[in-house]
Image (tube, rainbow over all chains, first blue to last red; front, side, top):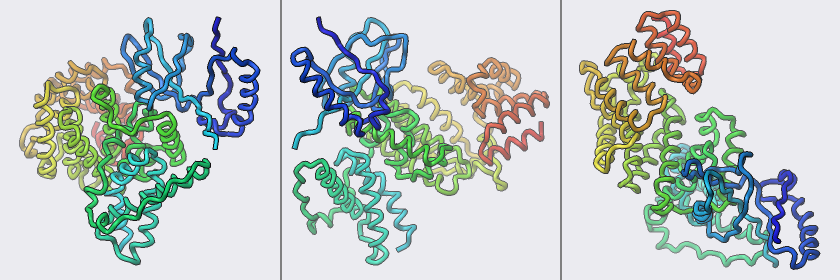
Length: 119
Length: 407
Protein backbone atom coordinates (compact mmCIF):
# COMPACT_ATOMS: atom_id res chain seq x y z
CA UNK A 1 0.00 0.00 0.00
CA UNK A 2 1.02 3.59 -0.44
CA UNK A 3 0.19 6.34 2.03
CA UNK A 4 0.33 10.10 1.92
CA UNK A 5 1.47 11.74 5.14
CA UNK A 6 0.30 15.33 5.39
CA UNK A 7 2.23 17.68 7.64
CA UNK A 8 0.00 20.14 9.51
CA UNK A 9 1.47 22.71 11.88
CA UNK A 10 1.38 26.40 12.55
CA UNK A 11 3.19 27.90 9.55
CA UNK A 12 4.03 31.04 11.53
CA UNK A 13 6.96 29.26 13.15
CA UNK A 14 8.77 29.25 9.82
CA UNK A 15 8.99 33.04 9.70
CA UNK A 16 6.97 34.16 6.67
CA UNK A 17 5.38 32.64 3.59
CA UNK A 18 8.64 31.72 1.89
CA UNK A 19 9.73 29.94 5.09
CA UNK A 20 13.11 31.62 4.93
CA UNK A 21 13.48 31.90 8.71
CA UNK A 22 15.93 29.88 10.80
CA UNK A 23 13.26 27.32 11.76
CA UNK A 24 13.25 25.70 8.32
CA UNK A 25 17.02 25.33 8.32
CA UNK A 26 16.84 23.81 11.75
CA UNK A 27 14.20 21.29 10.81
CA UNK A 28 15.52 20.35 7.37
CA UNK A 29 18.40 18.44 8.96
CA UNK A 30 15.86 16.35 10.81
CA UNK A 31 13.91 15.78 7.60
CA UNK A 32 17.11 14.74 5.86
CA UNK A 33 17.88 12.14 8.47
CA UNK A 34 14.33 10.78 8.27
CA UNK A 35 14.62 10.57 4.47
CA UNK A 36 17.86 8.66 4.94
CA UNK A 37 16.34 6.40 7.54
CA UNK A 38 13.29 5.66 5.36
CA UNK A 39 15.34 4.90 2.27
CA UNK A 40 13.11 3.33 -0.43
CA UNK A 41 10.09 3.59 1.88
CA UNK A 42 9.82 7.28 1.04
CA UNK A 43 8.61 7.75 -2.55
CA UNK A 44 8.41 11.55 -2.73
CA UNK A 45 8.00 14.59 -0.55
CA UNK A 46 8.51 18.33 -0.45
CA UNK A 47 7.94 21.40 1.67
CA UNK A 48 5.28 23.88 0.61
CA UNK A 49 5.53 27.66 0.73
CA UNK A 50 3.04 29.27 3.12
CA UNK A 51 -0.70 29.75 2.58
CA UNK A 52 -0.15 33.45 1.85
CA UNK A 53 1.19 32.28 -1.49
CA UNK A 54 -1.72 29.92 -2.16
CA UNK A 55 -4.17 30.28 -5.04
CA UNK A 56 -7.41 28.33 -5.22
CA UNK A 57 -9.48 27.31 -8.23
CA UNK A 58 -12.98 26.77 -6.87
CA UNK A 59 -15.76 25.04 -8.76
CA UNK A 60 -19.31 25.97 -7.81
CA UNK A 61 -22.20 24.66 -9.88
CA UNK A 62 -19.79 23.79 -12.62
CA UNK A 63 -18.29 27.30 -12.77
CA UNK A 64 -14.60 27.75 -12.02
CA UNK A 65 -13.23 30.84 -10.30
CA UNK A 66 -9.74 31.74 -9.16
CA UNK A 67 -9.12 33.19 -5.71
CA UNK A 68 -6.19 34.43 -3.73
CA UNK A 69 -5.62 32.33 -0.63
CA UNK A 70 -5.85 28.74 0.59
CA UNK A 71 -8.77 26.35 0.61
CA UNK A 72 -10.75 27.31 3.67
CA UNK A 73 -13.87 25.16 3.81
CA UNK A 74 -14.58 22.36 6.18
CA UNK A 75 -17.34 20.72 4.14
CA UNK A 76 -14.80 19.19 1.81
CA UNK A 77 -11.80 17.09 2.64
CA UNK A 78 -8.42 16.55 1.04
CA UNK A 79 -8.77 13.60 -1.29
CA UNK A 80 -5.62 13.46 -3.34
CA UNK A 81 -2.87 15.43 -4.94
CA UNK A 82 -0.88 16.04 -8.11
CA UNK A 83 2.70 17.26 -8.01
CA UNK A 84 3.32 19.10 -11.29
CA UNK A 85 6.06 21.01 -13.07
CA UNK A 86 4.78 24.20 -14.70
CA UNK A 87 6.50 27.33 -16.02
CA UNK A 88 4.30 29.75 -14.07
CA UNK A 89 1.11 30.16 -12.05
CA UNK A 90 -1.11 30.50 -15.13
CA UNK A 91 0.15 27.16 -16.41
CA UNK A 92 -0.46 25.62 -12.98
CA UNK A 93 -3.98 27.08 -12.90
CA UNK A 94 -4.64 25.61 -16.35
CA UNK A 95 -3.73 22.16 -15.05
CA UNK A 96 -5.73 22.68 -11.85
CA UNK A 97 -8.79 23.48 -13.96
CA UNK A 98 -8.48 20.11 -15.68
CA UNK A 99 -8.35 18.09 -12.45
CA UNK A 100 -11.68 16.24 -12.35
CA UNK A 101 -14.13 16.75 -9.51
CA UNK A 102 -17.31 14.74 -9.16
CA UNK A 103 -19.24 17.88 -8.25
CA UNK A 104 -18.24 21.09 -6.51
CA UNK A 105 -14.87 21.44 -4.85
CA UNK A 106 -11.58 23.26 -4.93
CA UNK A 107 -8.05 22.70 -6.05
CA UNK A 108 -5.49 24.59 -3.97
CA UNK A 109 -2.24 25.52 -5.69
CA UNK A 110 0.86 25.92 -3.55
CA UNK A 111 4.39 26.65 -4.70
CA UNK A 112 6.83 23.96 -3.59
CA UNK A 113 10.02 24.98 -1.81
CA UNK A 114 12.96 24.26 -4.04
CA UNK A 115 16.14 23.53 -2.07
CA UNK A 116 18.87 26.11 -2.83
CA UNK A 117 21.43 25.11 -5.44
CA UNK A 118 24.67 23.81 -3.94
CA UNK A 119 27.62 26.07 -4.74
CA UNK B 1 14.87 73.16 -12.84
CA UNK B 2 12.10 73.07 -10.31
CA UNK B 3 11.07 70.21 -8.11
CA UNK B 4 7.64 70.41 -9.72
CA UNK B 5 9.14 69.76 -13.16
CA UNK B 6 10.89 66.65 -11.88
CA UNK B 7 7.74 65.46 -10.18
CA UNK B 8 5.85 66.04 -13.40
CA UNK B 9 8.22 63.85 -15.42
CA UNK B 10 8.13 61.15 -12.77
CA UNK B 11 4.35 61.19 -12.78
CA UNK B 12 3.95 61.15 -16.52
CA UNK B 13 6.64 58.63 -17.36
CA UNK B 14 6.75 56.68 -14.09
CA UNK B 15 4.17 54.02 -14.92
CA UNK B 16 5.69 53.35 -18.26
CA UNK B 17 9.23 53.13 -16.89
CA UNK B 18 8.27 50.90 -13.95
CA UNK B 19 6.28 48.67 -16.30
CA UNK B 20 9.18 48.34 -18.72
CA UNK B 21 11.60 47.56 -15.91
CA UNK B 22 9.21 45.06 -14.34
CA UNK B 23 8.65 43.29 -17.66
CA UNK B 24 12.36 43.16 -18.33
CA UNK B 25 13.46 41.96 -14.90
CA UNK B 26 10.24 40.13 -13.97
CA UNK B 27 10.39 41.54 -10.50
CA UNK B 28 8.13 44.30 -9.17
CA UNK B 29 10.30 45.18 -6.21
CA UNK B 30 13.45 45.55 -8.26
CA UNK B 31 11.59 47.68 -10.82
CA UNK B 32 10.04 49.90 -8.18
CA UNK B 33 13.23 50.38 -6.22
CA UNK B 34 15.34 50.95 -9.33
CA UNK B 35 12.92 53.64 -10.49
CA UNK B 36 12.94 55.28 -7.04
CA UNK B 37 16.74 55.33 -7.08
CA UNK B 38 16.78 56.80 -10.57
CA UNK B 39 14.43 59.55 -9.37
CA UNK B 40 16.64 60.23 -6.36
CA UNK B 41 19.63 60.48 -8.67
CA UNK B 42 17.72 62.84 -10.95
CA UNK B 43 16.77 65.05 -8.02
CA UNK B 44 20.47 65.44 -7.33
CA UNK B 45 21.85 65.68 -10.84
CA UNK B 46 19.24 67.67 -12.75
CA UNK B 47 19.20 70.90 -10.74
CA UNK B 48 22.98 71.14 -11.18
CA UNK B 49 23.38 69.87 -14.74
CA UNK B 50 20.02 70.86 -16.15
CA UNK B 51 17.27 68.55 -17.24
CA UNK B 52 18.28 66.04 -19.93
CA UNK B 53 16.70 66.46 -23.35
CA UNK B 54 14.78 63.25 -22.91
CA UNK B 55 14.12 63.02 -19.21
CA UNK B 56 12.19 59.75 -19.22
CA UNK B 57 14.81 57.96 -21.32
CA UNK B 58 17.37 59.16 -18.78
CA UNK B 59 15.32 57.81 -15.89
CA UNK B 60 14.76 54.50 -17.67
CA UNK B 61 18.42 54.01 -18.41
CA UNK B 62 19.53 54.87 -14.89
CA UNK B 63 16.79 52.62 -13.52
CA UNK B 64 18.00 49.79 -15.75
CA UNK B 65 21.50 50.12 -14.33
CA UNK B 66 20.23 50.23 -10.77
CA UNK B 67 18.17 47.10 -11.40
CA UNK B 68 21.18 45.29 -12.83
CA UNK B 69 23.22 46.35 -9.81
CA UNK B 70 20.54 45.06 -7.47
CA UNK B 71 20.34 41.74 -9.32
CA UNK B 72 24.10 41.37 -9.24
CA UNK B 73 24.16 42.00 -5.52
CA UNK B 74 21.34 39.53 -5.05
CA UNK B 75 23.20 36.86 -7.03
CA UNK B 76 26.39 37.46 -5.11
CA UNK B 77 24.46 37.14 -1.89
CA UNK B 78 23.13 33.84 -3.12
CA UNK B 79 26.72 32.92 -3.96
CA UNK B 80 26.07 32.42 -7.64
CA UNK B 81 28.54 33.52 -10.25
CA UNK B 82 28.00 37.24 -10.97
CA UNK B 83 26.83 38.22 -14.46
CA UNK B 84 29.22 40.18 -16.62
CA UNK B 85 28.42 43.90 -16.45
CA UNK B 86 26.17 45.33 -19.16
CA UNK B 87 27.83 47.51 -21.78
CA UNK B 88 27.47 51.23 -21.21
CA UNK B 89 24.87 52.79 -23.51
CA UNK B 90 26.35 54.06 -26.74
CA UNK B 91 25.93 57.59 -28.05
CA UNK B 92 23.44 56.20 -30.56
CA UNK B 93 21.32 54.75 -27.79
CA UNK B 94 21.23 58.12 -26.16
CA UNK B 95 19.78 59.66 -29.33
CA UNK B 96 16.82 57.30 -29.56
CA UNK B 97 13.65 58.87 -28.28
CA UNK B 98 11.99 57.25 -25.31
CA UNK B 99 8.95 56.09 -27.24
CA UNK B 100 11.17 53.54 -28.94
CA UNK B 101 13.63 53.01 -26.14
CA UNK B 102 11.07 52.27 -23.45
CA UNK B 103 8.73 49.53 -24.57
CA UNK B 104 5.17 50.16 -23.44
CA UNK B 105 4.62 47.28 -21.05
CA UNK B 106 1.89 48.93 -19.03
CA UNK B 107 -0.79 46.53 -20.21
CA UNK B 108 1.35 43.62 -19.07
CA UNK B 109 1.83 45.25 -15.70
CA UNK B 110 -1.91 45.89 -15.39
CA UNK B 111 -2.59 42.21 -16.02
CA UNK B 112 -0.02 41.27 -13.38
CA UNK B 113 -1.51 43.63 -10.78
CA UNK B 114 -5.04 42.45 -11.54
CA UNK B 115 -4.26 38.73 -11.65
CA UNK B 116 -7.05 36.76 -9.95
CA UNK B 117 -4.44 35.19 -7.67
CA UNK B 118 -3.80 38.65 -6.20
CA UNK B 119 -6.12 39.57 -3.32
CA UNK B 120 -9.12 41.51 -4.69
CA UNK B 121 -8.69 44.32 -2.18
CA UNK B 122 -5.08 44.85 -3.22
CA UNK B 123 -5.48 44.96 -7.00
CA UNK B 124 -6.65 48.54 -7.47
CA UNK B 125 -4.11 49.91 -4.99
CA UNK B 126 -1.30 47.96 -6.61
CA UNK B 127 -2.28 49.17 -10.08
CA UNK B 128 -2.38 52.76 -8.91
CA UNK B 129 0.96 52.40 -7.18
CA UNK B 130 2.85 50.68 -9.98
CA UNK B 131 1.12 51.66 -13.21
CA UNK B 132 0.05 55.19 -12.25
CA UNK B 133 2.93 55.92 -9.89
CA UNK B 134 0.71 57.24 -7.09
CA UNK B 135 2.35 57.48 -3.70
CA UNK B 136 1.35 55.21 -0.84
CA UNK B 137 0.05 58.30 0.99
CA UNK B 138 -2.20 59.28 -1.92
CA UNK B 139 -3.63 55.80 -2.32
CA UNK B 140 -4.13 55.41 1.43
CA UNK B 141 -6.15 58.64 1.41
CA UNK B 142 -8.26 57.55 -1.52
CA UNK B 143 -9.04 54.16 0.02
CA UNK B 144 -9.50 55.50 3.55
CA UNK B 145 -6.74 53.26 4.88
CA UNK B 146 -3.81 54.06 7.13
CA UNK B 147 -0.48 54.17 5.32
CA UNK B 148 0.99 51.23 7.26
CA UNK B 149 -2.12 49.14 6.52
CA UNK B 150 -1.89 49.95 2.81
CA UNK B 151 1.87 49.31 2.71
CA UNK B 152 1.25 45.95 4.29
CA UNK B 153 -1.42 45.12 1.72
CA UNK B 154 0.86 46.14 -1.14
CA UNK B 155 3.76 44.20 0.28
CA UNK B 156 1.68 41.06 0.62
CA UNK B 157 0.41 41.38 -2.95
CA UNK B 158 3.89 41.93 -4.37
CA UNK B 159 5.21 38.98 -2.45
CA UNK B 160 2.42 36.79 -3.75
CA UNK B 161 3.19 37.85 -7.32
CA UNK B 162 6.90 37.26 -6.89
CA UNK B 163 6.73 33.92 -5.15
CA UNK B 164 3.57 32.26 -6.42
CA UNK B 165 4.78 32.46 -10.02
CA UNK B 166 2.35 35.04 -11.45
CA UNK B 167 3.56 35.42 -15.04
CA UNK B 168 4.57 38.78 -16.52
CA UNK B 169 2.49 38.26 -19.60
CA UNK B 170 -0.70 39.48 -21.16
CA UNK B 171 -2.66 36.22 -20.96
CA UNK B 172 -3.59 34.33 -24.10
CA UNK B 173 -7.04 34.67 -25.67
CA UNK B 174 -8.34 31.54 -23.92
CA UNK B 175 -8.04 33.37 -20.60
CA UNK B 176 -9.25 36.67 -21.97
CA UNK B 177 -12.75 36.81 -20.55
CA UNK B 178 -11.75 35.76 -17.07
CA UNK B 179 -8.75 38.08 -16.84
CA UNK B 180 -10.18 41.08 -18.63
CA UNK B 181 -13.08 41.17 -16.16
CA UNK B 182 -10.60 41.38 -13.29
CA UNK B 183 -8.72 44.20 -15.03
CA UNK B 184 -11.82 46.20 -15.86
CA UNK B 185 -13.39 45.91 -12.44
CA UNK B 186 -10.09 46.87 -10.83
CA UNK B 187 -9.86 50.00 -12.96
CA UNK B 188 -13.51 50.72 -12.16
CA UNK B 189 -12.77 50.59 -8.44
CA UNK B 190 -9.69 52.76 -8.95
CA UNK B 191 -11.66 55.35 -10.89
CA UNK B 192 -14.58 55.31 -8.47
CA UNK B 193 -12.15 56.43 -5.77
CA UNK B 194 -10.89 59.28 -7.91
CA UNK B 195 -14.43 60.25 -8.83
CA UNK B 196 -15.74 60.39 -5.27
CA UNK B 197 -13.85 63.59 -4.72
CA UNK B 198 -16.13 66.01 -6.54
CA UNK B 199 -13.90 68.96 -5.82
CA UNK B 200 -11.07 67.15 -7.54
CA UNK B 201 -8.41 69.44 -6.25
CA UNK B 202 -5.10 68.36 -4.85
CA UNK B 203 -3.43 65.05 -5.58
CA UNK B 204 -6.59 63.21 -6.49
CA UNK B 205 -7.35 65.43 -9.46
CA UNK B 206 -4.11 64.19 -11.01
CA UNK B 207 -5.17 60.68 -10.23
CA UNK B 208 -8.33 61.06 -12.30
CA UNK B 209 -6.08 62.22 -15.13
CA UNK B 210 -4.06 59.04 -14.73
CA UNK B 211 -7.25 57.06 -15.16
CA UNK B 212 -7.91 58.81 -18.46
CA UNK B 213 -4.49 57.71 -19.62
CA UNK B 214 -4.81 54.17 -18.29
CA UNK B 215 -8.18 53.56 -19.93
CA UNK B 216 -6.82 55.04 -23.15
CA UNK B 217 -3.95 52.54 -23.08
CA UNK B 218 -6.40 49.72 -22.40
CA UNK B 219 -8.71 50.83 -25.22
CA UNK B 220 -5.83 51.21 -27.64
CA UNK B 221 -4.47 47.78 -26.88
CA UNK B 222 -7.83 46.03 -26.81
CA UNK B 223 -9.77 47.73 -29.60
CA UNK B 224 -12.13 44.77 -30.03
CA UNK B 225 -13.21 44.55 -26.38
CA UNK B 226 -16.45 46.51 -25.89
CA UNK B 227 -16.12 46.49 -22.09
CA UNK B 228 -12.67 48.08 -22.24
CA UNK B 229 -13.95 50.76 -24.62
CA UNK B 230 -17.04 51.32 -22.48
CA UNK B 231 -14.82 51.92 -19.45
CA UNK B 232 -12.76 54.46 -21.40
CA UNK B 233 -16.03 56.17 -22.40
CA UNK B 234 -17.39 56.17 -18.86
CA UNK B 235 -14.29 57.71 -17.33
CA UNK B 236 -14.37 60.46 -19.96
CA UNK B 237 -18.06 61.25 -19.55
CA UNK B 238 -17.59 61.53 -15.80
CA UNK B 239 -14.45 63.65 -16.04
CA UNK B 240 -16.08 65.90 -18.64
CA UNK B 241 -18.69 66.88 -16.05
CA UNK B 242 -16.18 67.64 -13.32
CA UNK B 243 -16.32 71.45 -13.77
CA UNK B 244 -20.08 71.40 -13.10
CA UNK B 245 -20.14 69.07 -10.11
CA UNK B 246 -19.89 71.78 -7.44
CA UNK B 247 -21.54 75.17 -7.09
CA UNK B 248 -19.73 78.31 -6.00
CA UNK B 249 -20.17 77.41 -2.33
CA UNK B 250 -18.69 73.95 -2.78
CA UNK B 251 -22.04 72.15 -2.64
CA UNK B 252 -22.54 69.07 -4.83
CA UNK B 253 -24.78 69.66 -7.84
CA UNK B 254 -26.82 66.60 -8.89
CA UNK B 255 -26.45 65.52 -12.50
CA UNK B 256 -29.89 66.73 -13.60
CA UNK B 257 -29.17 70.22 -12.24
CA UNK B 258 -25.65 70.58 -13.63
CA UNK B 259 -25.26 73.23 -16.30
CA UNK B 260 -24.26 71.36 -19.47
CA UNK B 261 -22.60 74.54 -20.71
CA UNK B 262 -19.85 73.90 -18.15
CA UNK B 263 -19.14 70.37 -19.35
CA UNK B 264 -15.97 69.73 -21.33
CA UNK B 265 -17.29 69.14 -24.84
CA UNK B 266 -14.08 67.78 -26.43
CA UNK B 267 -13.88 65.10 -23.75
CA UNK B 268 -17.52 64.20 -24.31
CA UNK B 269 -16.80 63.86 -28.03
CA UNK B 270 -13.96 61.47 -27.19
CA UNK B 271 -16.27 59.48 -24.91
CA UNK B 272 -18.95 59.35 -27.64
CA UNK B 273 -16.40 57.90 -30.04
CA UNK B 274 -15.43 55.18 -27.56
CA UNK B 275 -19.07 54.36 -26.88
CA UNK B 276 -19.84 54.21 -30.57
CA UNK B 277 -16.97 51.77 -31.21
CA UNK B 278 -18.04 49.67 -28.23
CA UNK B 279 -21.67 49.52 -29.38
CA UNK B 280 -20.66 48.61 -32.91
CA UNK B 281 -18.83 45.46 -31.76
CA UNK B 282 -21.68 43.33 -30.45
CA UNK B 283 -24.94 43.49 -28.51
CA UNK B 284 -24.24 45.87 -25.61
CA UNK B 285 -23.29 44.28 -22.28
CA UNK B 286 -23.77 45.87 -18.84
CA UNK B 287 -20.81 48.26 -19.00
CA UNK B 288 -21.73 49.49 -22.45
CA UNK B 289 -25.27 50.19 -21.21
CA UNK B 290 -23.90 52.05 -18.19
CA UNK B 291 -21.69 54.13 -20.46
CA UNK B 292 -24.74 54.76 -22.64
CA UNK B 293 -26.56 56.24 -19.61
CA UNK B 294 -23.68 58.71 -19.23
CA UNK B 295 -23.82 59.34 -22.97
CA UNK B 296 -27.51 60.19 -22.88
CA UNK B 297 -26.89 62.70 -20.09
CA UNK B 298 -23.90 64.28 -21.77
CA UNK B 299 -25.91 64.78 -24.97
CA UNK B 300 -27.88 67.43 -23.08
CA UNK B 301 -26.90 70.87 -24.34
CA UNK B 302 -28.43 73.23 -21.80
CA UNK B 303 -30.60 73.46 -18.70
CA UNK B 304 -33.54 74.58 -20.87
CA UNK B 305 -33.53 71.16 -22.56
CA UNK B 306 -35.58 68.63 -20.54
CA UNK B 307 -33.46 66.01 -18.70
CA UNK B 308 -33.37 62.71 -20.61
CA UNK B 309 -35.16 60.69 -17.90
CA UNK B 310 -37.25 58.46 -20.22
CA UNK B 311 -34.14 57.41 -22.15
CA UNK B 312 -32.26 56.82 -18.90
CA UNK B 313 -35.12 54.65 -17.62
CA UNK B 314 -35.17 52.61 -20.83
CA UNK B 315 -31.42 51.98 -20.53
CA UNK B 316 -31.78 50.89 -16.91
CA UNK B 317 -34.60 48.54 -17.95
CA UNK B 318 -32.22 46.98 -20.47
CA UNK B 319 -29.47 46.82 -17.85
CA UNK B 320 -31.79 45.19 -15.34
CA UNK B 321 -32.58 42.46 -17.86
CA UNK B 322 -28.85 41.64 -17.93
CA UNK B 323 -27.79 42.29 -14.37
CA UNK B 324 -30.44 42.29 -11.72
CA UNK B 325 -28.74 43.68 -8.66
CA UNK B 326 -29.88 46.13 -5.95
CA UNK B 327 -27.61 48.94 -7.17
CA UNK B 328 -29.02 48.79 -10.70
CA UNK B 329 -32.55 48.75 -9.24
CA UNK B 330 -31.73 51.74 -7.06
CA UNK B 331 -30.38 53.73 -10.01
CA UNK B 332 -33.39 52.74 -12.06
CA UNK B 333 -35.67 53.97 -9.27
CA UNK B 334 -34.18 57.47 -9.57
CA UNK B 335 -35.23 57.60 -13.23
CA UNK B 336 -38.55 55.93 -12.43
CA UNK B 337 -39.37 58.71 -9.96
CA UNK B 338 -39.07 61.28 -12.74
CA UNK B 339 -41.04 59.30 -15.30
CA UNK B 340 -43.72 57.59 -13.20
CA UNK B 341 -43.60 59.59 -9.97
CA UNK B 342 -42.03 59.36 -6.52
CA UNK B 343 -44.63 56.92 -5.18
CA UNK B 344 -43.86 54.21 -7.73
CA UNK B 345 -40.14 54.73 -7.18
CA UNK B 346 -40.40 54.54 -3.40
CA UNK B 347 -42.28 51.26 -3.47
CA UNK B 348 -39.52 49.91 -5.72
CA UNK B 349 -36.79 51.14 -3.34
CA UNK B 350 -38.58 49.83 -0.27
CA UNK B 351 -38.80 46.45 -1.97
CA UNK B 352 -34.99 46.24 -1.98
CA UNK B 353 -33.23 44.44 0.82
CA UNK B 354 -32.13 47.15 3.24
CA UNK B 355 -29.65 44.71 4.76
CA UNK B 356 -27.37 44.72 1.73
CA UNK B 357 -27.83 48.45 1.13
CA UNK B 358 -27.79 49.90 4.63
CA UNK B 359 -24.15 50.96 4.42
CA UNK B 360 -24.58 52.30 0.87
CA UNK B 361 -24.98 56.04 1.09
CA UNK B 362 -26.94 56.56 -2.18
CA UNK B 363 -29.62 54.16 -0.92
CA UNK B 364 -30.45 56.48 1.98
CA UNK B 365 -30.06 59.61 -0.15
CA UNK B 366 -32.48 58.28 -2.79
CA UNK B 367 -35.01 57.15 -0.18
CA UNK B 368 -34.75 60.49 1.60
CA UNK B 369 -35.38 62.39 -1.61
CA UNK B 370 -38.42 60.28 -2.50
CA UNK B 371 -39.89 60.63 1.00
CA UNK B 372 -39.31 64.39 0.87
CA UNK B 373 -41.16 64.66 -2.43
CA UNK B 374 -44.06 62.69 -1.01
CA UNK B 375 -44.25 65.11 1.92
CA UNK B 376 -43.27 62.46 4.48
CA UNK B 377 -40.95 64.95 6.17
CA UNK B 378 -40.07 63.17 9.40
CA UNK B 379 -39.15 59.95 7.59
CA UNK B 380 -37.25 61.94 4.98
CA UNK B 381 -35.19 63.70 7.64
CA UNK B 382 -34.39 60.38 9.31
CA UNK B 383 -33.22 58.97 5.97
CA UNK B 384 -31.08 62.07 5.35
CA UNK B 385 -29.55 61.52 8.79
CA UNK B 386 -28.75 57.91 7.86
CA UNK B 387 -27.03 59.14 4.69
CA UNK B 388 -25.08 61.85 6.48
CA UNK B 389 -23.96 59.33 9.12
CA UNK B 390 -22.14 57.39 6.40
CA UNK B 391 -19.42 60.06 6.09
CA UNK B 392 -20.07 61.62 2.70
CA UNK B 393 -17.53 63.96 1.08
CA UNK B 394 -17.89 67.55 2.21
CA UNK B 395 -19.65 68.57 -1.04
CA UNK B 396 -22.17 65.79 -0.67
CA UNK B 397 -22.69 66.48 3.00
CA UNK B 398 -23.48 70.12 2.28
CA UNK B 399 -25.97 69.06 -0.36
CA UNK B 400 -27.63 66.44 1.85
CA UNK B 401 -27.84 68.93 4.71
CA UNK B 402 -29.49 71.58 2.58
CA UNK B 403 -32.01 69.05 1.23
CA UNK B 404 -32.71 67.86 4.73
CA UNK B 405 -33.55 71.40 5.76
CA UNK B 406 -36.08 71.73 2.95
CA UNK B 407 -37.78 68.44 3.88
